[in-house]
Image (cartoon, rainbow, N blue to C red; front, side):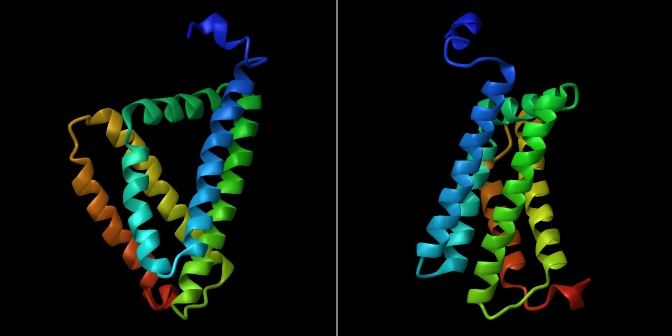
Length: 163
């Protein structure tokens, strides 16, 4: 599709960004629904994290997401869209973590859950950069390593004592 043709479907650049961001948010809502429907929440979360690595490290989508973040640094309307989506994403992830950890008998305060969500988000956002900087990176191996990290985050008995 040509650059000019895309504007038959979208009013402006901000509308395109909003549609892409909305697609990502819908994916996160679907993941949360899969976890809630799962018989083994912990193992489902860990499996889905591997799928997330592969999706996050797809060169096209990684590049597009990084372009959106770059545009947000210059364009206040895109920044508003990206920041609002981030708030929704983090809130969704906090609720997902709360659910996953509660099914394992763990209760966490809001600050701990928020910190966990920020760590997980930072991992995945970092993977986007790595996918661009090192296209030869072994994505399968990265997925396995991220699964180990996710297992630790989800099943650790007490994060406050660990700090």
